Length: 186
Image 1 (cartoon, rainbow, N blue to C red):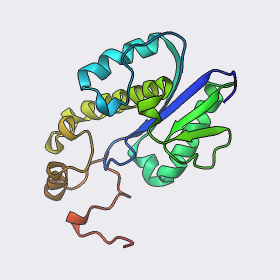
Image 2 (cartoon, rainbow, N blue to C red; image 1 turned 180 degrees about the horizontal axis):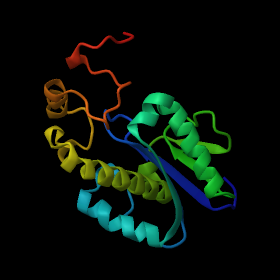
Image 3 (tube, rainbow, N blue to C red; image 1 turned 30 degrees about the horizontal axis):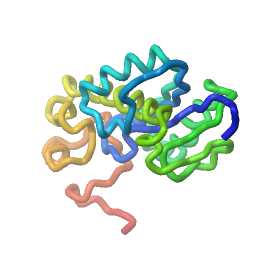
């Protein structure tokens, strides 16, 4: 790393079977107390921190709806999202949570960075809250799936709802579900 500002990057929704993949980049410009991995915070804590992060940072959020995830694949969406963050939040050192840069240059990676580095924690929170707000908004339109409870992840109740009702427009069609007896590569 250099003396440039640090842009922390994280994503939410990579493993979901419904909803968007959301990637956030954050450059903190002020102090935000309580930052940690978004998965270690309650929904109420994440919501409270969201506003504080927005007020004390330069940030950019990129969202890829299910149709784009299906058309491009997760890796290409991540690649495009990382590049978009670099374009908007230019002149930074970039640190992405995980172990792959998805072929994007000038990005460092760190496993569990969302739990160790405040800028990545902030990105984790912005991505998770943005994604959760979006999928909960769909819960009213697609009541049979219980999106407000599982946020699009492949829980038992979610899989059972898909078996009973089929997929809706925000389900990722390219993600195979064993309960539907879909062919897989394995």
